[in-house]
Amino acid sequence: MLYYPKIPGSRAAPSGRCVAFEKYDGTNLHWDWDADFGWVSFGTRRDAFDWSDHGIAAFAEAHPDLADATRIFEANWAHSLAATLAGLPAERLGASVRCFTEFFGPSSFAGRHLRHEPKELRLIDVESESAGMWFPDDFLRDFGHLAIARVIASGKLTGQFADEIRRGKFPLAEGVICKGVHRQRQADGRVMESLWMVKIKTDAYQARLRQAFADRWEEFWE
Image (cartoon, rainbow, N blue to C red):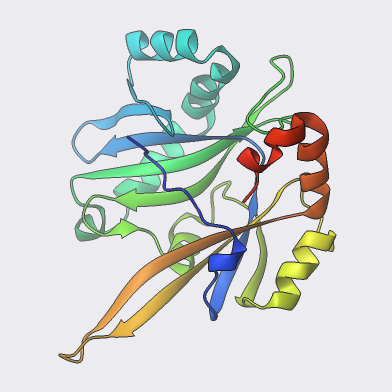
């Protein structure tokens, strides 16, 4: 199971307004919250563990380079994020919510981390059982007071902006995730809305990948 969707490259970008968030060079982790029981499970993009002493120990054994993540989450996120969720309308949350963070340190690269370095978690997305992934403006409104991914720009996604990201106009280690809302009017007059996301990475990051992985560099690209 893939807990977080694979984000396409910029060639799949639709035209229209979006919010460009910094894309951190780290590891995607998810944290599952239940309205009745609080935090119940967590894991990487491809696995999950119970939020318990046993589950935390099993996670550390399976992912030793990520072991600091549970301590950071418990110290810096568990209470404040749960309080934020509890304060939102129940119909928006449904029975459960999945919060996505990026785990990284100063030298993290292509999913690899140095154990001795300090790490952090940044909130990048929130998904509810009833309403799906938060749209970017709603995400900023509901979670912007927390340590979320840095907003680089907001406006129409253009080829010029993509080129500026690639050429290094903005101070970014990897690139950006652009998120917008696609609206389509149905035959009955209703307007259906869906979230779209694309990633744009810098030329400098591509050069690092080529140097580190040679012929395999595209596995870590867009």
